[in-house]
Image (cartoon, rainbow, N blue to C red; front, side):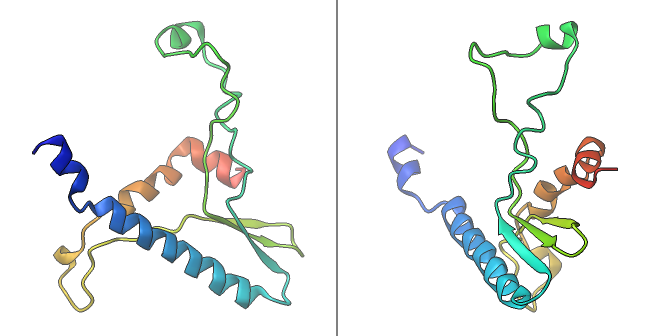
Length: 135
């Protein structure tokens, strides 16, 4: 397929991105309404983990094997969709909204497509679990 044809074709990313944004907005609107006049609050795009990789100390052999840009990296981390804070206890739950595009209601499991489950697995790696849960 020629480059100009590829640019003009319908792409799943266009459809998926629009629907993902809508799902995130719906999630936020619903919880903001439910939390009104409670000890809970929802925050969009929490920044707590936006620099978790900046201060990681690597050994010289590790550093020699990876690309190191001329300018120092000042922002490198994990960007979650929402944080739900309990203002009474001070505890926070972090939320990443994922869609599984292609699901057909009433259809077979094989009708579903997408990789939301794969994208969300990164949050269950040992290193991120330790940082995200503080344990």
